[in-house]
Image 1: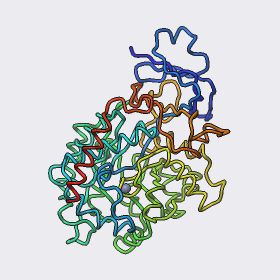
Image 2: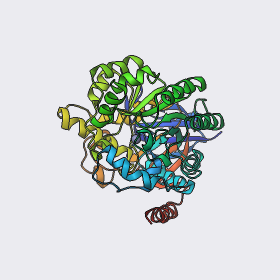
Image 3: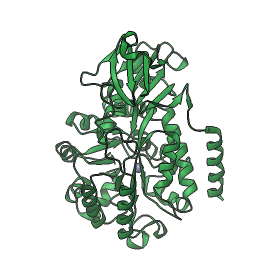
Image 4: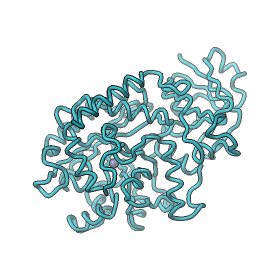
Length: 447
Ligand SMILES: [Zn+2]
């Protein structure tokens, strides 16, 4: 039995009372949180446990990233000044040249970046499969980095010749898409509590697949007991496309095709109106809020305050690295706070609410009641933040400082009780070599 005592930190539990406990110990046993409280270190329960000193640190649940396109880490700082549709049209031809090694490298870099910013669980949305690419390419990267992973089998099926946005070379036949969804779910999905790997089904967006594929994907996901994910109501162009093509708003389209419910989460939702927010609240449909990406693409400001007040499950996403172009999840919490305040004033979103979205909120969106808080019985996913350095020097409130100051690199990151980051360094990956390889592959794509 492996046991670890995380000693003496200021623990942000995200439990039902949102307790923050000073000088608090956390006892972990075989990947599960066994006990939380001050003075545990002196009790018989902690005898023989390995110890991790967290004095002077803030300890939070591991952060949860609810939306990403890891492959885009290969194309950062490209198409710098375009709105969503123009941006996509510039990037599609580059993405069409990617091969399995590009996917694997980009996912490794993206997940490493997330881990160092406190992330213990990330979703991913891989929606293009050129030249032999498979979902496995990203799964291999997650195993190398060591974080939990919820990759989704994305897809595009309507190419330019059929009135869609992507080039025909990047779209797949819908029967082949559904067959590969079944293959990856059967091969990799783990429904058990504590799972390190869960698969979702995720047609890219209403403007790149057919109505039939949306409907069939929902039926398949329910048959298999896996989650559904897509992009929805991302910006004004996206809503206009829905009205023009489907004759309804994005929320109505989603509802009609089975795309609402606690097993569904949608990225962005910048343009949801009051009726759609009510629909999402009633149906417990989740939202991945991606503030940096929304800023980068000028998409607008998502109604986060209204979504929270309505009780919509709400998490944060860094989104793909071609539209962020960073993958720092704790900084995304900061950006969420700042963006709501631009729209609604300084009391629109608190630092603790932003931190909740980054942890507990994300875990709920991804259907993980076993994650997102520090409480006995939950899985041992913890982020230990050293707030004694430059970034928080002079901060009166170390918990709020995580969001208001920084940016911070996590000091220690535990996933299922195992060290993924130790003293600010990735435990299982030689980062220099990974970066060198990534840049070599990127230069090949530029040629
Ligand atoms: Zn996205």
